[in-house]
Length: 150
Image (cartoon, rainbow, N blue to C red; front, side, top):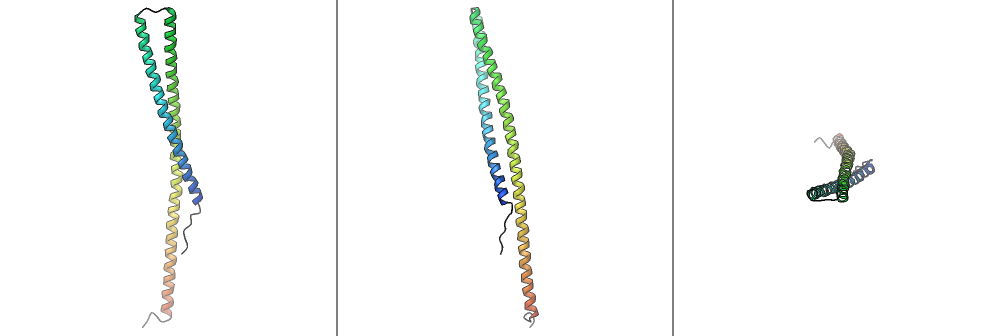
């Protein structure tokens, strides 16, 4: 009996490899998003701590130079927090793009898998039909030669 051979098997293997690559890229993007979220939390905590220190120092006596240095430091921490927020937004966009790529890669792979399964079922039906035709022909030959009547 002839074996089933899926002519697009190599393409299916390529699609499976693309899915693996897309999954790895998505995992890296997710890790980058988590790291960016942690950096934002740290920047926000440093900024809040700086605001507390600035408020506490305002209660006491400060020279103009001390005030300027404290406010410049605080403004730098605010800017760092804004930058961390922008980086988080960019990381989230990248993660979403990688999720979409993964979904598309999985869809393309599943299309080929369904086609392979359908072709295998068609092949199986054709083989069974051919086998049944051979059995029927053998039965007719035996009947014609007189083996069927007694």
